[in-house]
Every structure is written in structure tokens, then in C-alpha cells.
Image (cartoon, rainbow, N blue to C red; front, side):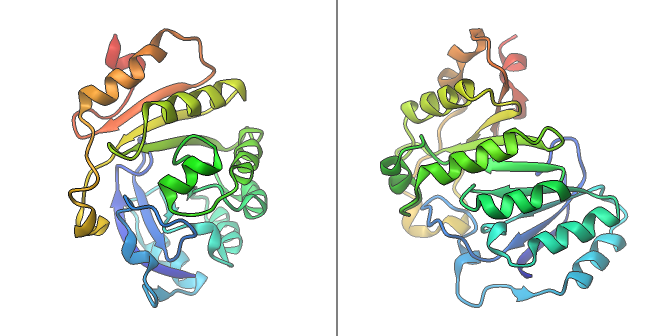
Length: 248
């Protein structure tokens, strides 16, 4: 497996868990706001044997969970095999994905505990092209959503990074409408975009960080709706907190 970076311990990637994070190389999206663009570079990272990864995890006595992120992890040919091996050592396994590889997800689901699916924008080809700079058929993301949503043994988080000047209020409206209509059973997280060096200097002035108040105002109307899922806000003011808690 080609790995571009490892965090030995994180308390931010999976709520309420001490997590070791592996960043896989390569992605089929080209999002302008991506903070891991170095993972898209040719020859980024290095190859790890599965036995090496398992050994690193066993030696890390401070963690109880593994997050495999990227890049796009489902592009890695040996991801399913890794997850099978991780289950043998009884560790909680989470996969971050953009949802464009439902066939791989179907193979992964018996061997993992959590999926974090990024829905980048409202699920139309036009909006996805604008936000991801890629020509993606939204139907494959919807297929991935349906597969995970029907797998009750897997914790399911969907998240959208709100980038001012790129995302629109209508995107959030359409995503929540889609989740409601399809009986989403997990948690929906709206994340605050924050510039970092990984995004690239050329985007520092083009992409804007939304304020806490803006994000809260976007989400406020959903406090009073009976939804089958809970909404969370993740930003630099509150960290990671539910909308209900923020507005009580």
C-alpha cells in the first residue's frame, strides 16, 4: 500500500477515539480546497507492506482505532486485504472516501467499523464538476451511500466542507434534502474550510473561510425539523458539536 503520511495519535479524526491515521496516496478528484495536495504528486509517499502497517499499529499502545484517509483510499489495491488483517487484531477501523468506488466499498463493508463519506456538493454532475474539478457521475456516489446506509453494523458519517466562494447555501439544502428523503441513519457534519499550506498559495486569496456565525445560520433552520439523522458542526470555535447542543 502506498502511504504518504502517518499520524501516530489523533483525537480529532474519529469522535471520542484515540486514532492512528494513515494517509494514502492518489485521488480521482482534484478539489481546489484539498489540504493534502502533496498526496497527488507523482512518486509521493512510499510503499508499505501490509505486515509493516500491522506492526506499526500493534506497537502503538496509545490508540484504539485506525483511520485510513487520503487521498482516496479505495484506489489502493490491497485496502480490502489490509482491513481483513486489521479485524484479526481487533482494532476499530474507519475509512474516509469520496464514494466513487462502490464496488470496493461493498467488499470493505464486512471488515470495517466506520465510513466517513465526503459529499462535496449537491449531487448533480454540474455542481460536482465545479467543486471537485472532476467529471464525476453522481449516481455512483448515490450507490455508495445506499450500500453503506443499508449496513447497520457500520457507523456512518457524511460530511461537507463548506468553502465560502465555492459552496452555496443551496448545496447544503440539497444534501440535507437528499439525506432526509433516503432515511440516512448516521450523522451529517458541516465542516469549516480553513486554509493551510497544503492547499497551495494560489488559492489563499481565492477560497474563503466561512465564519462560525455564517455556518450556524445556515444550519439553524434544521434544528426544528424532524430528521432521521443528527447534524453536527465542526469549526475552529466549537470543535465538533451537534446542532441541538449548540442551539439549546
